[in-house]
Image (cartoon, rainbow, N blue to C red):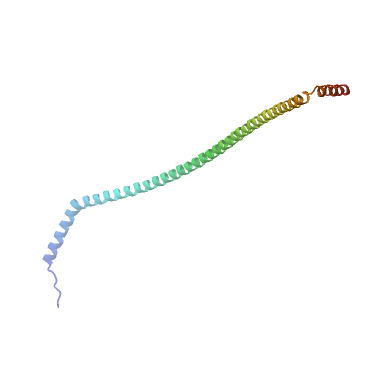
Length: 164
């Protein structure tokens, strides 16, 4: 097998066409192509810078949000402590008020019981006195029906009066 070698004329024309095409491409195509590549490279770099900046802003926002969340938690805890303290204070106040009212009611009940007891004792005394008078009246009627008994009773009272 033998290699085919191109002739000089063919090689000349191919080289000339390549150089013309190279010059045309260099003058008309490479500048716009290189310009668009440069523009694309700049836009990609700009996008990367903006992405980095957005990432930093997101980190700052995240840190700010975490700080706000921590502050909100602290505020919530403080409010819960205040509410608990107020509830405890209110409970103690109500407990003291209830104890005071209970003591007042017990005192009123004791006074009412004492008044009822005194009234009952007075009624018992009055009833006993009335019964004693009724009994004494019946005894006196029976004993004083006889004139001799009347004289004897007056004599015994006179003796008691002198002795006292």
